[in-house]
Amino acid sequence: MNLKKISLTVALLGLSFGYASTPSELLTKKCASCHMLESPKIGQLSSLSAPAMDAVAFHTKLAYPKAKDQKTFMIDYVLNPNASKSVCESNKVSKFGVMPSQKGNVTKEELNIIIDYILKTYPHTKFEKMIKNVQISSKINSLLNSPFLINKEEFPHITKILIENWDKESIHLSPEQKTKLLKVRKETMDGIKEIKPKIAKLESEILEMSVDGEELKTIKPLVDEVAKLKSKGTMIHLKCIKDSIEILDEKQLEAILPFWGV
Image (tube, rainbow, N blue to C red; front, side, top):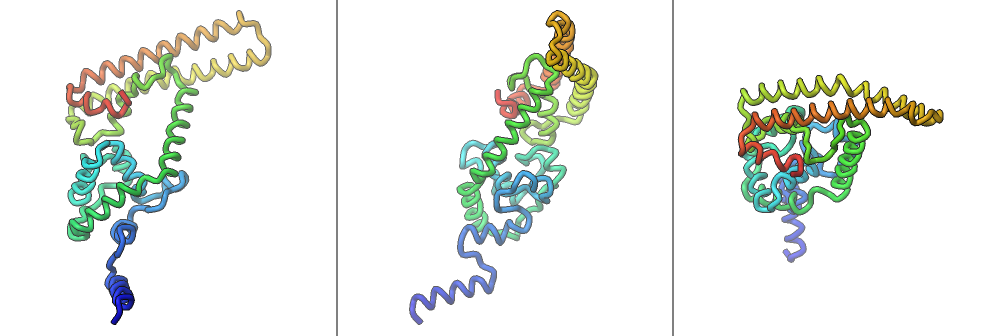
């Protein structure tokens, strides 16, 4: 039998017994039953039953800048998954659940090949652009509807960040801390919900009066009232930050800094 026939025979045997001859085929065989391997469109994200592979790589690289740490994390998580280790937000973990351990389903050799391929291939540029556009759109909408005078990333929505990362092992919130933070969150949201509709109503009136050509001295009291309400909203926001910081210890504060870009 010549070399060409031997190669063909080996390939056919591989297909017959379900072997994967390339990293891409191995990824498909071991991961595609749960994870979408092509880049999802924005309308598909809500219907997925597990994070797309683009999202898996995106969040892993965001949480672990060094390639070595990315691979170490992924190997550990695939074999010993736990909600506290997840790089996804807590609400995503609640939606998708924790993936089952793949011990016995994938060998260490296969896992090394798969993860090397994932980290080399994902996330696709198209996915990163989509996420960036979503984030920009979200920031624009937040600014358009902001009840605050100060809108900087250095003034984070700290209780929201903590709730989104509620079960992260790196933050390690105690039950007592969670109770206190939920109280701060409720007080903050109640205060903002009270003033936000008032601001929106005043801003609509100001716009209408401007279009109708009203005198500026007539519009000014409404502008002053908007400023007063946004000042109140800003103080509510600052109190939320202060109260939250007092609940956390230094290590926890250090752990959440990357989530607001400080």
